[in-house]
Image (tube, rainbow over all chains, first blue to last red; front, top):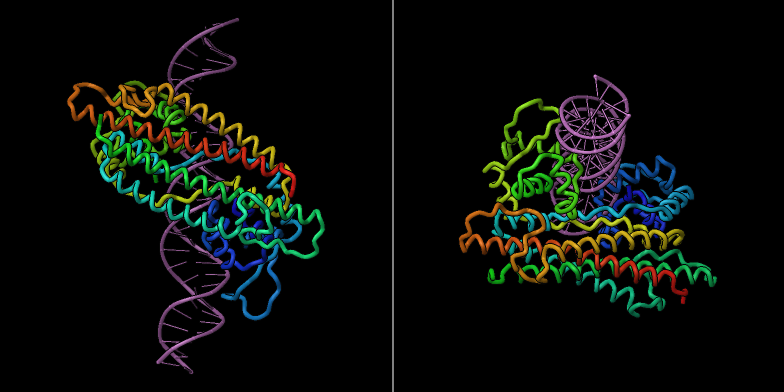
Length: 203
Length: 203
DNA sequence: CCAGGTTATGCAACTAGTTGCACATCCCGC
DNA sequence: GCGGGATGTGCAACTAGTTGCATAACCTGG
């Protein structure tokens, strides 16, 4: 039940059409909550029906025409409610580990190829994340004016409180990114280690 | 589409009834591929229909009576086929990160409580894994006669080839366990770090 | 001998993500 | 001015995991 909240978050950062959302998902929220355009359209429909978002008025034909959505107060409230709440962390579900377990029983044919394929993918993803970090958080652990990943939280007047909360927003976004980096790093290391263990002489 | 293969693996390690499988899942395969007893029964039915496993013959009434399954040659073949193949690694789907992202927009109320709850859970899981490692792989990175996590791969006659493949099975099982340990370690570190970043004075 | 908890099997409805496809509009080049 | 790719919206069917519940056998204590 997280997709609607992912969408609300994205729309608060910036009102968008379905396809724009899809694209922004691809390079941001989608890293830890992927969604296809079909899912997004379906959910936009539901959110609109539920009165949490609305389509910005516009003219001309409807079908095949860009349609922008913005979050209504009820939507923001719902997102706040959800954010404050909690979830059981849902269990890992990792087919690769399953395959290793199976290989322990029926043999390791083809395993190394699969491991090295995964290694390449995780390395690529890690490089991506590092690039994003370099771009968006250049001052390492700091909040030095860096504008966060994507959502420019509608910057007007600039009270001290607003600056503080913007700084904290940055910190949170950086934390999320570090999670991605940490996870990918872990997999890269583990894959290297495991391939080595596999190819070692049976003692 | 991994559950049937998880079940085949478990059944190859040791023929079992539905409930036994459920319990073994809870402390072994289920760490990276959780399944409820309902899922398992359903899948056992399908696998039997498909001719990949069969129920061991027994007498007496059927309903509510223990029923053991074993893997047929076709099942083993299917598992080998699947193991040799590959998957795209499916994307991470982590609601906690989503919540952080949302908090960056609507405020951090309740966040720290949630983070510390997760921290406790991951610490507990990590301790569990470490305990299992201590028990099943005492000689650190080695294969010193340690009997793997659970499946005692039906040990009779003991050719050199069999010893080798048993050693490799151990190594694989250890690799899987190390993945669990690595992942939990990562989360523990990240959660500590992130809580610190959150509570720091806005600069 | 029977009430109540434990073990065990299983169905059905629901939820959410995935896949495949349909169709409209726009715009660019020929 | 029109054919075709890019952009954009959307439905429908499918798959797989989740939740809730029904039911049977067995065992133990009163």
